[in-house]
Amino acid sequence: MIKIEHLNYIYQPGMPYEMQALKDINLEIPDKDFVAVIGHTGSGKSTLIQHLNGLIKPTSGKIYINDIEITDSKTNMKEIRQKVGLVFQYPENQLFEETVYKDIAFGPKNMGISDEEIEIRVKEAIHAVNLSEEVLEKSPFELSGGQKRRVAIAGVISMHPEILILDEPTAGLDPSGRDRLLELLTNLHENTKMTIILVSHSMEDVARVAKNIIVMNNGSVYAHEPVAKVFERGAELEKIGLAVPQVTMLINRLIEKGAKLPRDIYTVGYATKIISDIMKGNSDV
Amino acid sequence: MFKDITIGQYIAGKSVVHKLDARLKLILTFLFIIILFVVTKPSSYFFLTLATILVILMTKIPLGYYLKGLKPMLFIIIFTVFINLFLTPGDVVWQLNVFGLTAKITLQGIKMGLIILLRLTLLVCGTSILTLTTSPIMLTDAIEAVLSPLKVIKVPAHEIAMMMSIAIRFIPTIAEEADKIIKAQKARGADFESGNIIMRAKAMIPLLVPLFVSAFRRADELATAMDSRCYHGGANRTRMKQMKLCKTDYMAIIYCGAFIVLVAIIGYIL
Image (cartoon, chains in turn green, brown):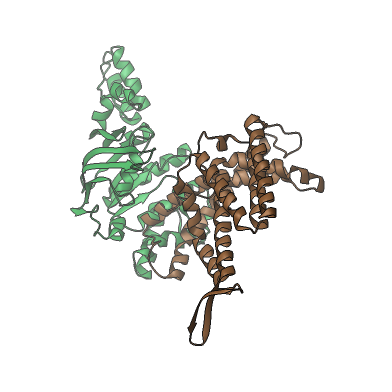
């Protein structure tokens, strides 16, 4: 479980460019959750997630991961970074080894895991991201953009984190690459019961995979609720520079026109099901 | 870690020194350096120091920035001062015998030591004035202008200046990139801080490989972008900001010229 208490973060304190990036954040993310963090550019999403594995030290406030206070200077950060895996934006830019195998093994190796165990983990990670074992002996620089990104994610999965954080993992991928990546995350979540925190700009992505949503606005938590509840507040979201998924927008329009539809529709699949049910029942749509 | 790189740091300001034509500042700085190494009389140094202090005050930049520039030079300055102090032959004013070796300080040595001290300090301060008050872009433009007479002997003045301004432009970008990669590798358990020198050098590989890859990619993309906008180097290019000498510049030329003559006369008479 992740617990954040009164977290504040100020960029460059005392300098002319001083800026409060995070303001009094209080959050609790339970185990096995799949939560999305949304917010417009500069709302503090990336700053927040970098606090969760100690890459950024808070100006004030406390963060607990499984009841261990990671903001305490005595905490062993290596241990925390093993528990909390962080996949940065464009993670393919961090690949550096000669072979994919070595690159995925980098994390576990830093953790001091035995070679036999590393081999098991690398193979398991490469399967988890739906790549074949043939890729392992290739240079990461030979792969396509989407494959590189999968390898980079595998490099974090191989550390067996309890919590996996991904910052905009679908940015710059084509639609099919995006679909496959989201599917991968859903499978990971279901198979390993990992807590997944997904930072995203895309409401469609969030609607498809997440259970709960944290809405960030100007460095504060604006809302922390189940997906359906957040998307019911479409008008409010628009005010803070966000939008609801397109299908929700469509349903809202239909409701305005007098259609009797529930307001908690935010995926195309569910919308199709509801509408076809109504049409089969010959109701007054 | 990389956020505080201050190579050729520029402090924006509105002082007279800031407003001077960059070409003029560049030439005057060169003249200043030459004078520093030509003159030998202590009295000339007195006036040079006075003039430097005056210009530093005119820049309205806190003294701390100049001292920061001196810090990395401190060892070299002290070292050369001591060498001169002890190894200049002449009239002995103080000596010490240790284990049969004689360390002696001579009157000429003290004089030489002081001159060297002033020479190096003024050198650093003088060049700092140039870099602190001139934006890197203006500076490269000035370098191009000053080098352009050499085009006759096929020195690619424009290309050199262009490369310099691109290099300077990308320092913050690459520093930011490095910061990001460091964080990403730390998240994978990389350790950049502990271990002996070999271990640390090895630990740099996960940083340097991606950094070089991205720097090359960036360079390639920039070249393509420049090509696609028909960039073709120096011939017949005009500038958005034309450099033109104005009244302040002519005043500066007159003052500096008068000062140089003064130093020359003093050096000759005294």
